[in-house]
Image (cartoon, rainbow, N blue to C red; front, side, top):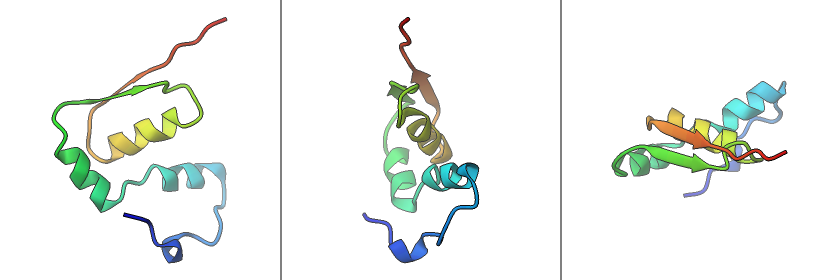
Length: 72
């Protein structure tokens, strides 16, 4: 299910508004994740998409465990 671009804001006032928009689950995602038993494990949560993906799943009502590997 694709989002309707007409529902997009014309612009985002700040980064926090953009991140909140990206982490707002659509009804279909909430329904799909409700059908998945158990918790959600996000591997690579420290990467480019990890934080947003983890917030999206949490905002859809799932318990999220996030894991990241940092090397020096």
